[in-house]
Length: 199
Image (tube, rainbow, N blue to C red; front, side, top):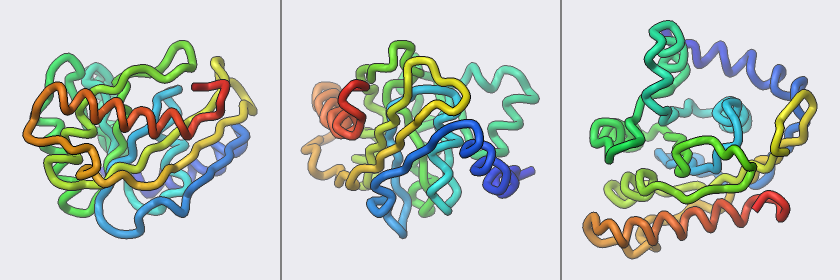
């Protein structure tokens, strides 16, 4: 069962009631072709909020432990999530992401691999850059600024940056050092989109 269309109707008004949302840079989102949304990770509601201004289906990379509960796993799969093992270079998950992008679908990746407990962005893992460079998919950096403790009517600002052409990273092959450097460059683009106090 695909619950995504229903979520697209229910989630936006619920999120606007619960939080004070502000979206900036929506004009930077490509209108055609598959692309990667690479965002810092602040809370469990990030995937829901990110989808609000984007009127195309999003697919989400999510840690595999979230799928251990069969009911919850079924729920998030029906909303576009697919699992990744964060402890290894998960070829199955990254390959699936590539397939989606080649079909013109969009994939959300949180490069830090986990939510920030301090509110400050962490170091990026290489998955997003690896996928982008493998198939030439553009990366749209996203900065999510929110208070350290997010509660009812918290102000949350989401900024979409200009798409990054993976060719600009200068990555040749799958050199670990080159991928780390490129991931750091990508994370710098994300951090630059945050409010100063959140950097």
